[in-house]
Image (cartoon, one colour):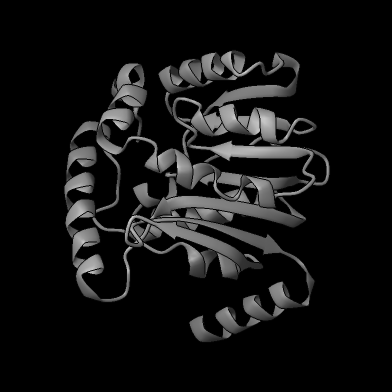
Length: 229
């Protein structure tokens, strides 16, 4: 899977098709993150999340992983435009699931902005497990992604939008997803629990903050493991 062909005009395409809606989803929970030191961002694309995080998380260091070299070039340019220092960020060209760079003690924040929705259930489970291995024992995970509401017109609207989006992106980027898969069960299996979430656009867009560690995380993991067994 690679968004290489979209890299030069992805930002403009997003602006035309969605305005600022996706960026709002990416950044709405930024003020809730608190003090983080080591941040792993996977599937960042042209750098819109790190552009905002550069100002919101001034003490953090960032590792950005993307399968597209073109997207990484765009992200680097976005970081510099935002006033970011190159000493505080590294860009890694790699596909997922795969080897993820690690830091001592693990990353204390993992960010997947509109990335997990690209995977079918099997690959998604591998990606979540791979990223969870790079996360620290008390890490947070910020998931910014599409959603499918449970009922009503909002559900049918979301299904129609996502069917079109997945069809187009499968042709252009070879993503494995044919429909949206909720990553929540696999996050819970890795010891994360949902702490907070914000939705918009009739529930089509959602930002959720997951946290690992403590009694709640251990209990969620045990419950999920029991259900799977």
